[in-house]
Amino acid sequence: MILSTASATLVPGGAWLLVAVAAALYLLTTLPMALLHRLSAAALLGGFVLHGLLLVIDIGGFGQPMPGARLGFGPVLSMTVWLVIGVYTVESRMVPLPAVRKGLGAAGALAVLLAALFPGELRVYGSALAPLHFALGVGSYGLFGAAVLHAALLDAAERRLRSGRGGAAAPAGRKLGLPLLQLERLTFRFVGAGFVTLSATLVLGVLYTVQWHWGNHKAVFSILAWCVFAALLAGRRLRGWRGRRATRGVYAGALLLLLAYAGSRFVFEVLLGRPPA
View 1 (cartoon, rainbow, N blue to C red):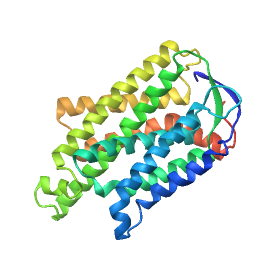
View 2 (cartoon, one colour):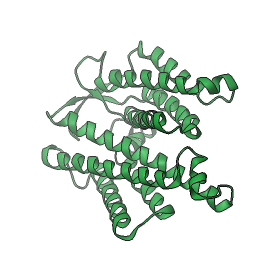
View 3 (cartoon, one colour):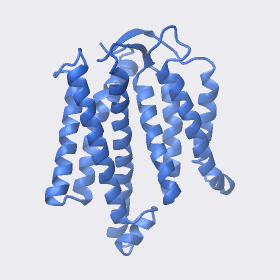
């Protein structure tokens, strides 16, 4: 750990209104009504903006008795979902991706609610590099989350192709908003960017974190995830891995990374009802 723990905290009272409005806007994108369908892009953007404001309040520790950040599984998961929605928002300006909007809206609503219900304990920064370490770590979560999103789209496009409903490879992908080969390239670009970010996070953790332990569950799962992504990128470059073999590697690495921080904190904070040791 790079942060010292303060007393358990709750979400500031005024933030609950923002939580309710952000969740409601996100949920508007999931409704099938024709009028709301036309407004769903605006609703997703509005939810995204309020979600970002909540993260500033939440992870910045505003309204708390001392400076620091709440870094429970809820806020970390919330920031990861927010980053994935941000990637979608930018990408949809260039190539529409309506097929995933409902799923992202549902994920956004769930994320803001979980962050409010399980904010975790307030932690005071124990190192000048702690904020950078944390930002890089969550950034890698977001990049790999975007890779998972594109890998899921890639799998869906390939299933359409195999079932005979997609025709050629490009039309099968365009059913979901992007050609198949472009989906594949984007997936590995996000994996590559996430791998670089995760590598920097681990280097900072080893060199500048006084409480780094190689046997710690966070360190073990993070290093396992790094190994999976390194093997995936090497297999892609040297052996041309693609299709299901590649997407399964993306899912496996992302799952290990999720277990490294958010997963272990979920066990402590929700199932056991106490902060991590």
